[in-house]
Length: 339
Figure (cartoon, helix red, strand yellow):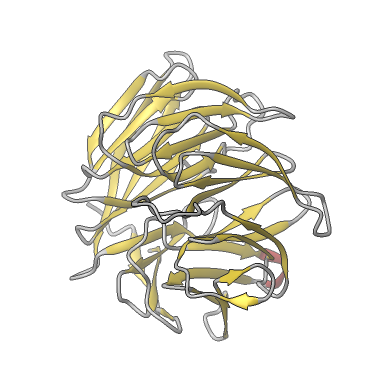
């Protein structure tokens, strides 16, 4: 197998990565030749801004909050940038609520408190699974199985909860919107939960459920939606490719020996990144043949991050030219670029 990628200089972070699914988010700021990275550690989000020449880093830490005032010890479950046509927001989900910031982390523009039960229950309460959808929606999953749909104005802080989608019975694990930019795709959003159930949605003033794809009682930890195809990674180490609208299974790959923690797709090239507890990061290539309605997946590249339980992996650009990886207890972001 050809050496597709080589390792670059790592980016230091202030505190190490927690063992959470999808624990890395990346935002390219092309006009300023910068890339932002976020990694969650307990009740803090490490944010790093890195110049493309690799010479300058600046660091910021965002604390878990309760409301607009007090910092909180509640654990953060995920941090992810949501890119909408009019603005980019950084969304943090925790055991207490949902925090939305301007993309550079400077100003918190919105806080949504989770409904916590009056009497303590055995079930944990948290939000997890974050996705921007089309023009003006940000969707966030909750441990009850609900999906919260927020309506986001083009500027300002008048963000509102516009709808709650109640189809999942288990905690939401991840969510993804159609990333190809194609307007022909009917499905806009896929949500996944701890039972492996996938729900496929069409967005609008009211979100419509298009399909439910059953999960065989194994958690779906990471999910993507590209050109009408759902790409789902599971606790079994498998990746499955489904046609979003019909639920037809196109392919199933035994990709990893252990739990998959992160999937990502480079929308312009169809490169797929998968990373797991087994220390391996793999790059695959997806090809769609519309005439026969078939999707093929081909294995392209492997990288072993020795003795590391990988918890986040993301491409740094839409072509898959570079990717970044985080690992449990590592205080750095490891980067690879095409050789």
